[in-house]
Length: 604
View (cartoon, rainbow, N blue to C red):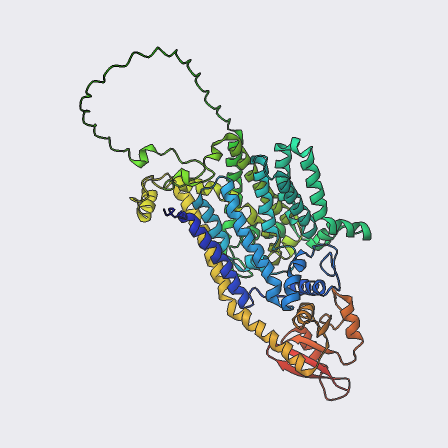
């Protein structure tokens, strides 16, 4: 006998394809040096190199007392095997993105979403604008790990609030460990941590009063141990350092903060804008985002306030009557022929027996195909789903409010939109009202008899206006994200060409035998990492004064070399200043040009 092959449901297969497409798109970008690297990412690469060599075990990003170096520890094994390279540094961040997609799919399903809605969530997150892929792939510290960690906290919260007794302590430990790691790496995820933690306290307070509470605290302290030990040993306050770095020591007008935080922030942070700017039409998301937040929160709150109907009581089992005595056997009579079987009635049409779609399930998807549909019929699990959705929405609102209140939103709104990268964590909850309304706009019927084109036509012609608006907003959401993704793809040739020019610079320095240079902040550590520390660079400003060196040892090494060269981008103010020192006499400089760069060598 052959076992019947189990067919993979269509939405599950399409979700797997969307996940592979998202990862493949980003792997293709990495192949062409996109997104462009910088000295901050190179600083994380240098930390990974030092870890791989056993020279140093840094707790914080070099030159500051905040932002943990988790990305450096993840990349260190690859760098120890393959050597320092941008690809080795970014492969762990690509793996974190793939984990984010898989966990987002699982969270969407656990929150009651049907397979098609989970496909929509993964499909949207598979797209990637310039700002989004920078947040996800650049190992500059604190951003690639935020989204997968936030989704993991929410998913663990759902499992701990709904599952039985199996494997509960490991899940408690996992929640505490992820929370502790994020406290060390970057406090931007704190609103989601507090929200999911509040759900656990509200629903599992008795369990937390026992061994589970001890396990959570031990795991949380273990994850945050690098931060705690460093703070106790050196008297540092990471929170104060974060506030200073976010612009708390400078002033920005509230008008600039509101514009940068509430107008530019949501479309930039969630991937609806072109590289480095937002077109006017792309700002529609800044209006849609708070409306969706409010609608999704009201939907979750309504679920929480709806009383759960009591389960119907079983009728009492009637008593069995006493068995009468068996009569004496007699010869059986000849049985008559059985009457002809009546004709079977025609089965009722599928549309007449389907229950109303609940939890946003599409009408052409049988409810039995959702592994959670039967379980979520229980009122307690509905409440858990609504509570976690509410926590995610509250976390997103808190992240946006904190960013808007910061001076960074008013001073550098385009670049500082990276602080909103964790808004993507709330995507399964944010789009929920749209999906429910759009699902009701499609007609019910047999999937084999109703084609997609007829479904859309019937939706536009006969659905309620709310459903049609929801379909339009969903289409605009995917369309805007796709346009932004296309704009990011168009930058690939220019970014790759700049990376090739930088590789030519490294090759030229090697041919010239240059080992110590001075240059701008955004030149130095990138050059040092690209040359595997064969060339050491000290930072100077445009007036040739010493700048901010994240590794002071580099400055000492350059100062000890009287033949140290200078590096400047072609056309920069630093190059203009150094051009004044060109000349044939001793003490002047000679220049070697490389496409895009100028190398200044001291004359003997």
